Structures are given as structure tokens and as C-alpha cells.
Image (cartoon, one colour):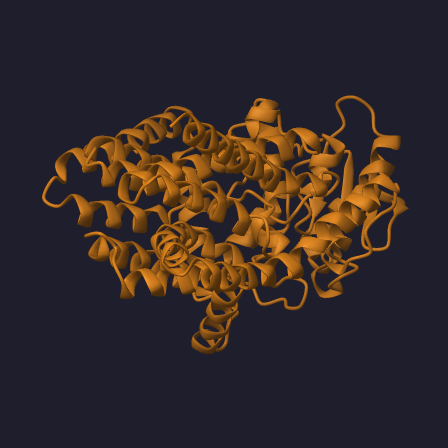
Length: 480
């Protein structure tokens, strides 16, 4: 008995150690910022300077995405990666608890390790930045766990918190509602509590109207103006890609559904179906959208994987190892190359980090010229410049999306606006501000959207002169 207990403890220590190692892989990105995370970091930086989102600065995401980064003072580097690693450990702990309630100890550790593995070895643009989809992992899992334990009020509270991170939390709420039928009243009350608190805060500080315009009006226009011309074929291809790199989960889930899910088959079908519906919303099928599906796939696959290992240990272990080797070989080497580049004090030579490296170079130039109290405006979508310089904009706008009406996911290649009328009014607001530095981070990439294209901006631009430049950015300073 004592030997068995020692073995169990050693297995637990080994699993925890492996989880920590997996979560710490993201430290290889310690000197880089990824798309989306820098937007929320810059928003947190403005909040720390006393500015209110939706009122004092444009912010088209729900509030908790920015508030999350207040924990590290809007900083980057080691604090950022440590915070994200801790967050992933929390998500793994919740997956462990849910799998243990439904399946058992072995399945619980397997689920935690699988979540840690697949949030490490996949496309860096999807798993490294903690934007809305990744940030919803913990409240999503907490809500599902509470629903599984029939704690309706708490399930609703966590769904409400998730909604303040990502509106797609409504799909998680729908899952909880189906599971908890007919016990809906506590669920609805719980859901209303964080939303009501947020509403009263927004109303009290005068940010409610801005929230509706920036998060919902802009969000609907963004969704309606999808640049995807063939959404069905794109969805099929990207879903197949995701399932291929997550083939261990796919195979485990298939095996579980064809054997035994211990009475949870209907629950799993509901969770999987509604989570995939959330992925399909907007018809873009971006890789980070699949974060909503990942927890359900992990929980569905776990009993199948553990069951197969128990029935056919040698064969199942060999198949599992081969399936896990695919994402490990595809995405693992980059972490080591990044770490080697860091130790060698050289920049990585990859196209997907070119903009970030250019922003770092521009920020160094600005810092060498800046004085306390200076402000900054960046034309384009380059919020990382704010993070690297620690400067904030003086007015409502801090990127060009609401000023051109062209979203950042297409403004490098098109001038088609989805927000043309309001954008013209927003440009009139912009010229009433006087930032110390102006960085044009878009004009060299898409000259048709350079700030000088707009006649009403030309007198405003005349007050600035070019003081520095990088390969992708032009840096101006106000002269009077």
C-alpha cells in the first residue's frame, strides 16, 4: 500500500512538473508581442493613466480583456509571459477538476496535460497572445464545471464574467442552460450579476454610449463586412487543419463516443456542437477561434484515450505518441529557435514578427527623443508601439481603424471601408488633438490609406515633421 501511494505521488509530481514546463514554453516569446495582446496591453496602460475605456479612448472589445492586463501594469516581457503561464495553469486545473468529476483521477491528469500540450504546440499567433478567445478559457471552464456540479448560480456568474471578456460566451451560457434545465432562474440571476455591475459602472462614468458604439455597433459592422468570399470551403479547410493537428483529441473523442461516456453523451454532444457553432460565427474561422472548441474536445477525448490505453496499452500508446508528434515536430522547434535567438541577442528572421520588430525599433527611436509628458498617436494598427514606448494618445483615437473605417484585418490590402460616414466625423475629432509624436505605421504598407490621403488631415499634418524612420514606419514630431 505504501509503495502504491509513493508511486501515485510521484505520478502526480511528474504530471504537475510537466504541466509547468508546458506552460513555461511561452517564455520563449518573452521579447515579442503578438497581434491582439498588444492592443489590450495598450488599453490597460491608458487605464493606468486615468483614462476610461469607451469614454476617453476607443476600445472595441469587452472591458475584462483590458482589465486582465492591469495585473502587470500594462507591462510586457517577463511579467506578461509569467501572467499567461499562470493563467494556463489555472485553466488546466479547471479541466482537471471537471474530468475528475466525470471520469476519474487518470482521466483528470490526462485532460490537464492535453490542454497544456495543445495550448503550447499549435500556431503561435493562436496560442501565445491572450486576447478574448484565449482569455475566455478560465471563465468558460469554470461555468461548465459549475453546471456539471449543478451549481446554477455560480455557473451563471462565470458565464457573465466570460461575456465581459467575449460575447461568444453566450454559447457557453446556452450549454449551461441546456444542462441545468429546468433550473434556469439561478443561472439567469448569476449571469445578470456581473453584467449589471459592469452596466452600472459604465453608466456611472459616462461610458455606456461609447461601449454600445465601439463594441456592438462596430462589432456588427465588422462581422457583416467579412472579407471571406467562400466561407464554407474556408471553414472546411481550417476545421480539417485544426482537427489534423489535434488528431489525438479527434481520435480519442471518436473512441469515447463509440465505447462509453458514462452517461454524459448528450452533454458532450451539446457542448461540442454549440462550441463549434461559436467557432463558425462570423465565418472567418481564425485559428484562435478554436479556443472555444478546445476544452470540449479535451474533455470528450480524455475517456477515450485513457480507455484505449487500458484496453490496448502498447498499441494505443504508440498511436497516441505518433499523433502527438505531429504538432510537437511542427511547432516545437520554433520555441527553441526563439530561445537561442534570445540568448544570442539577435532578432528572429520570421515574417510573422516583422511588424513587431519594426515597432520595437520605432519605439527605441521615439524614446530617445521623448520627454516626460509627451504623447503619441499611431496611424495604422500598431498598438505595440504604445506598449514599447509607454506613451499614451492624448485623445479618443489611437489607431486608424475608426478613422478610415477599414478594419485592421484587411487594411494592408484594401481601402474598402465598413464605417465610412462615422469615420469622417472621427477624423474631425482627431485633428483637435495634438500628440507630440505621430507614427505612420500604415502608409508605407498601403499608400492608399496613408493619413495624407484625407484632405481634412493635411492642415493637421502640416504641424509635424519627419524626425526618424524604419523600414515600415515614419516617425513625426510636432513642431508647433
